[in-house]
Length: 274
Image (tube, rainbow, N blue to C red):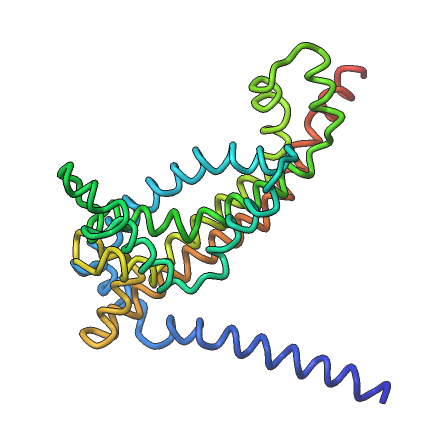
């Protein structure tokens, strides 16, 4: 049994890795590299890329702007309903994307809870780029906020207490002490939410549709081109794989960057003393 068990572990690990790697590798092996780049230069792929970049950048900026203070409050304050608030933040993480999309449509659609009032003011949300931004924020924002709560929760409270004792107000303590110390965790959360936003599909197609050059993102373009031009679908999929891998590599390298930068003050102090 002692000899068989390590073999079982090896075979299970090999099977798991092969199952996860082979489908990804097949995307790149299915067509020649030259055809891959040609397909990426098609009008469909370029239009989808532009829409994806425009909407994801706006959504990510809004996620960071609103999510950072939200994460700080949830991590550092105790108040009635805090557990419920955290649960509400986490709910979109487990919610089926189609449900998220139909919920957004029921809220911001022309006949929705808020959409009717917005329509009366001449503002249309559903099936526009605004809808894409809102869909990305809804499904990707919780990744940033939940990671931010953990990052701010790891900040040593004695440091923030010391800052307050020395006369720093809440805003200054947040900006000069808590935020820099939690920055690596916030950066990792931003990378994860960005990757989730890039790959968003279900909520977007329900709430924004798939109009080329308007609301069709890269993920939606893959779905549309699946029956039209399979090589283009593969090319766009390959691009998304590269982006996802780059984001994952960035997240994994953040702790190393943090350790290396934390050594600089020590090195400088040693040089000065010598």
